[in-house]
Image (cartoon, rainbow, N blue to C red; front, side, top):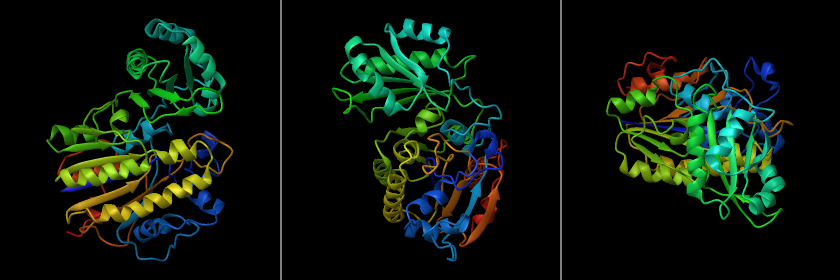
Length: 390
């Protein structure tokens, strides 16, 4: 059999009970987005039951869903992609990864200077597009690297591709990953290459590379891999799991590229688990409060679902979900503490099954483990029995 999980990065469906503690009251990425753009037209997601999870303008809630639907909460304390994906695979982290709202301390920056052999600019919490506008020209002239963080646990290094070769940037990031893995426990070190010759036309490229903290416990991916089940990561899955537990890693440049790579993979992977992340909802639209772009991205994904369906086999089970929210309609540009949608379909999945509110994203991993006959003992409770018709 094949299980396919597609993560619509940042597509939350309403605030979690503890949203106030994160200053995320009122966040509802898909619900608020639909209102802001005058309704969403997503016929394929609608027939899967999207409008039955929460009220979403433009998505009918009175249809008989093709498969099962519901939403999942989060047990992990963090609200970023690392925590979200780890929990999707059965590992909930109760302590949030460290944040650096005032920049990184001197001891980290001294290590950075030693490893890079270069000076630095920035060292503050900032928007990635704004900080390259602020320091891009000075960086090109002096060769100093731009260092910054965000509301997530990330150490980001921006560098112009002509000023700093990609191999050098990746090497520096890999060495900083070692430094920031121990007591610091920073979630991700991220290479952020950009191009352009002056302020106003700098542009980040698709050569971003994430160096993630290894998942602290055995997860469902690890168990599947150890059991000989093919495991394929598409998009930033390989980065988020530090390339562990995956028999094949496929990088992508965009949502469209991710779906096309998924199409291709369905033609060659005859059995196993395919895990895909579509990141544009987060990086291009959520963090930039671009509601119109976000809505357009959802429409494109909805259209591409038809192409996905054409490549299915009878034993396929498809899961569509998210890892957290990033509401483009609120003043904040950070991730938001939200429930995530859960849509499941396939020839062997019962129709119009309401799974309600699941307490943890880990329920997805537990379910996938059971589908492959594995004895998962970590976080999460499988709902396989509720959805399978045979």
